[in-house]
Length: 74
Image (cartoon, rainbow, N blue to C red; front, side, top):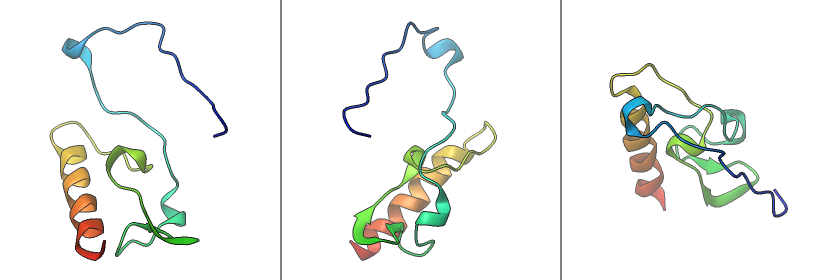
């Protein structure tokens, strides 16, 4: 990610906002602690991780649950 920058060209605003896709592959994380397998004290949670749920609160639940898992061991 060496100084890679993303510059959005525009937005439709909150009216049509949804979650993002992509992120850190879950195979690189401990499912118990959310720590990076190769760097045990580095944690990734929420939409930074490649987990996508249906609309309706699933992504919020993932963010809260993954944050809780990481917080318990951090």
